[in-house]
Length: 434
Image (tube, rainbow, N blue to C red):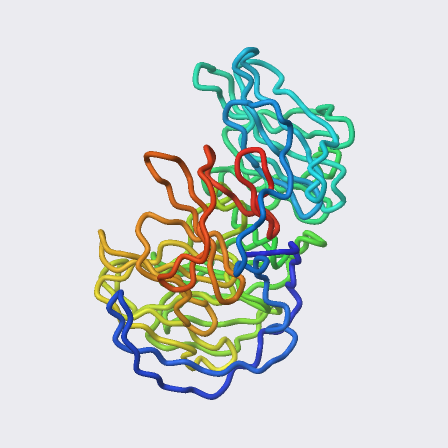
């Protein structure tokens, strides 16, 4: 998980060398792990983790608004400003407050333009001056979805734009509106005030690395060109032609991209130069679409893609692994019976064994088991050793738990809303918890 929202797109990935084979047995049925040491350079020193989870928090950092409101939850923001939405049953309208992340004091509050809309998600530019929020249909409403551009200082809605359904991301002082239906009408770019400035090809946005990908047809059967745009300039950073297949995936990492090709998984740097290829492999997992609901982080932007064998579908593979982008050598490798990759953060990956099996959370670079024997839990992030998870207790609500392998370090809750992580800070209901 990102704690500071830094794109880090220009950094080189750590030079990874030296393999160490370790035979282990863990509760989820892994047979062995192969690990490699990483050089202690700037990339490792800048790992993006949550705050220390070893000590139970002494109550919330702050509560926003002592008056109870229905369905109050954090729906976006950055390191300085968090957007907290509430539904007002007495008025039928939805509101969003823009709250200082350190003090809990509201800078402003905005109301939905009518009873037929409620706030979905919000993005806030780096300066904290402007927000772009999706307005979705209320359960009883029939109005089309909107994007509202809001002045954070005053709460006034500068303008609204009708959509067919979009998610909005902020990168520096721009907003990017991505349609739910892939490639439809491209990605619209707006400045901080909500003025439309450009349209990019339909594709995927990676704000942590400051890059966007799209695919161009070349006219040949399997040959396609990966096109990468720089979000700073909106210009093409590089093009690279690959032999792609129906299952082909792209996965960014610090310094480049991994791409499924006809030969295996190719690693290219952020100038498009080929670094290495892992023969016979494919990328095992990537969250489809921009998963910005829970947690509110770009979950596809992991430090390393998870690999499996070619021709294997999810649940059929027996081995999942990660490889050095510099050499292609394995950093770790776990064998499973029917593994499913459930989710990934910048530093962790959650893998479940079997359709109804238990899950474990691994450090994505070393393969170390951070937590195991999990059922129906969602990993929110890690402090490098322990992990923070959200688990729904049907009788009480959502519980926050810090885990060290199978041991619960502490537990707090319950909460009505599913806890979320935004820029390394943890929110639940109308409170900042961590």
